[in-house]
Amino acid sequence: MNFTKMHGIGNDYVYVNCIENEIANPSELAVRLSDRHFGIGSDGLILIRRSSKADFMMDMYNADGSQGKMCGNGIRCVGKYVYDHGLTDKKIVTIETLSGIKTLNLKIDPVGLVEGYPAVSNNGYVVSQVTVNMGAPVFEPEMIPVKLSEGYVAGKISNIMEINPAKDIGINPDEKVVIGMGIVMDREYFSGTCVSMGNPHCIVYVDNVDDYPVEVMGPKFEMNRLFPDRINTEFVEVVDRTHVKMRVWERGSGETLACGTGACATAVACILNKKTDDEVTVSLLGGDLKIRWDREENVVFMTGPATTVFEGTYDYTTNN
Image (cartoon, rainbow, N blue to C red; front, top):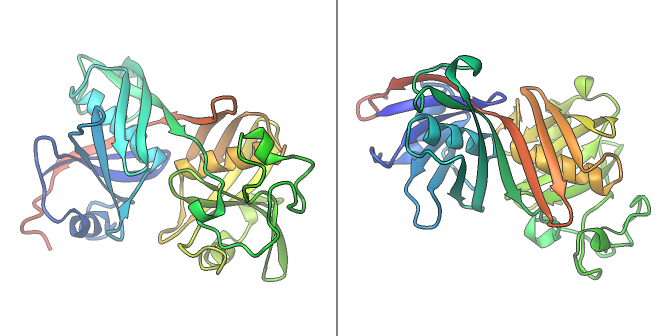
């Protein structure tokens, strides 16, 4: 099996072209490949397949073998893979995911100007950055999901900072939303905003994210009874109107270097809570992403790099 190791600001996956080479038992293989001691080492496995609905399909498996719906950093690398390997010459590419079809705009540069391993190129050009149309954020508690007690209703949530989110984003004013919800964890009070970008996120604010005990508080949020399917938690420090810093605790994975959907959810939450403008640089441990929420169209755009680390061959039929 030929593979390519790639990462988007530290969020790394093993990529396999399943248009040409089908593999068996991808869930089991994802666990083996992801092991950083006995495998290749990654946050999971992403298979690139044919699609009847889009240009390509992204079939994603997490490091624990579970199938993922969407990964913002992973899908940028899919865009780079299909262009660099000559599977397409398009600079606008559609990718089918379990969270819907995503549109990618590819920034193309000469090989010598792009960071990473120049194993292949499309006539001397490769993708350096990708802008992804991540679709519309989801706020309805039952769709995230969040298990709310009575009283958390749009326009009636405490600490809502004089904003009516239902009016701002075109949601029915009678819909329940989770903006500025008070959460007490280990006697610490948090103002939580919950958003789904294809997977569930709870965004909370801290004074100093660099020193914050994410490894302590992250699991407490993940397993809290408010979140029946567990939750990804973003701990956010607002630097100014155009810049925030974020660390993320991902359900089932712990703290990771980057989370694209989490960065999108963070930007949306900051905008709704009037902490930032509509275009925000989100600094994660692995690097920066630029997020823009077009509220008129209710669409979130994410821009960031995609990097090839190396390519190789893995004999998954005999390796244990």
